[in-house]
Length: 137
Image 1 (cartoon, one colour):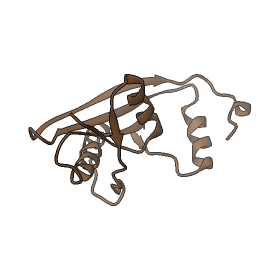
Image 2: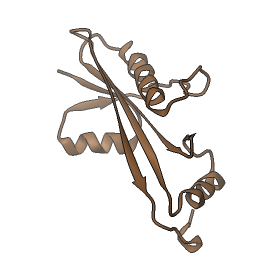
Image 3: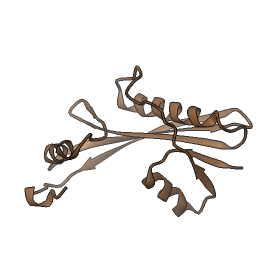
Image 4: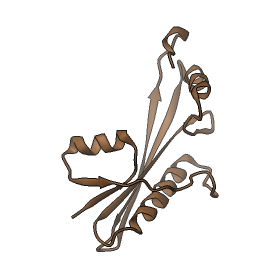
């Protein structure tokens, strides 16, 4: 059965390559910010993974389409992808010597059987103290 990843993330693609699975990857082009979004990180990643999988699934009639999404969560705030280098530096400074949570959602759609599998995982990340001279961006 054909596996279609609804992603252009080089990290996710590389992870699937390491599994030795035959798959194709296609960008979903979902506007993650121009929509009403759940406020809880676990619900957000599952919802965005669903939108991405469904967007790519429209291009296929067979196979399993898999959508993903991930966010960080620190002090009651969802950490989106940094917009620029300054935001990356500030985030590293903020998270230095702290712990935060990383949520990943997955949405799998079997197009032939019209079956859906949805899940998420929450991982606590303990970041060591990062010194100013280590932040070379």
